[in-house]
Amino acid sequence: MEVEIGKGKKARQAYGFDDIAIVPSRRTRDPQDVDIGWKLGPHLLELPLLGSAMDGVISPETAIKLGQLGGLGVLNLEGIFSRYEDADIQLAKIAKLPKEKATGAMQKIYQRPVEPKLIAQRIEQIKDKGVMAAGSLTPQKVRDYYEIALAAGLDILVIQGTVVSAEHVSSNGAALNLKDFISQVPIPVIVGGCASYQTALHLMRTGAAAVLVGVGPGAACTTRGVLGVGVPQATAISDATAARVQHLLETGTYVNVIADGGMRTGGDIAKAIACGADAVMVGSPLARAKEAPGLGYHWGMATFHPTLPRGARVQVDQVATLEQIVIGPATENDGTLNLMGALRTAMATCGYESIHDFQKAEVMLAPSIKTEGKGLQQAQHIGMG
Image 1 (cartoon, one colour):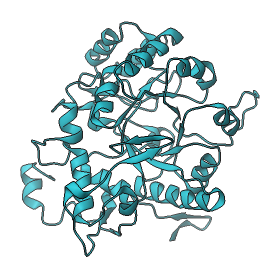
Image 2: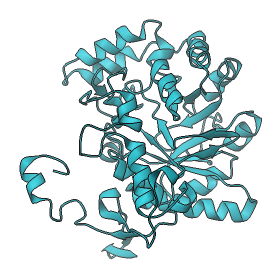
Image 3: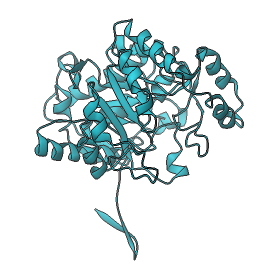
Image 4: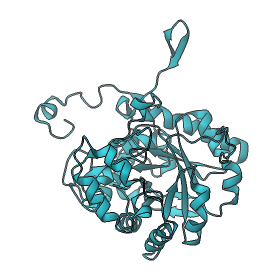
């Protein structure tokens, strides 16, 4: 539905996770009968959960732990761990910065160039523990570093930026041709972010195994304020899902849709899947783990941009272990622990036995879903309050 902004401009209404609710069906199931596994290229993963390629979230150690739990941690191959041998010292410095100086000081820390040998070392460190290694590179740098990452044993390559398109136009003639590049890479490639039907469809046509959907919804991201660019996640995911159907009709190839950002609780993750996502990529929920390398702080990949920072270093409470956050048990009632257990229970409550089935769930607009009847919780700042 379009609404008139003014005589010369109309706009679609878009919705975020807080605007919708999942409708229970006529059937229920036992949670143990629900399968939340999914397939990425030739790989079968137990959990539809990726850890964001952010230095405060994924270190080689947390990538290993998340992999052992059944998820996939994506290491930022242009981040702290690929710039500094003593990455923990740099992370401790970032955690101690006063908030008014954080962005400028981080820009200086990230001025140190990436060391290719460290890229190889970090990937080998993950692989030595017997889990899949996933790494993220920007479109501007992927040609510089992907070969050393492949040689080290990288399993999944993520080409990631604030917005990635299949038709980047550049006057310097050095634009990355995603379709040609992906055709030469022997491992599954994930590309993103995107937030519209057309962009998602064009990215799928590059040969990507999955597309990341999300522009600006993350807890630490300021893109929507700095650039004015973004689409609320429920609408963005649904549009990308429609693109996936069109691409499947055109080619017979199924491309995964990964919701990237904007999810804080298990309920948010369930809504992302119900809108059509195959998996989710989360940052701030995992930054709250006691093992998280950010030491209680979380920041995005564009926070330290040298000329136009589009992120903030936000403080998070380190409340539980990574295992408790991902698969429980939960000791809090606000939905931030046991994220995958919440997804499984949501699917069981609505009667769906697989991710693909749950993507067919009915959703409705529900602006009062988080406030109706919750006056006591809000007044006491507990639960949903």
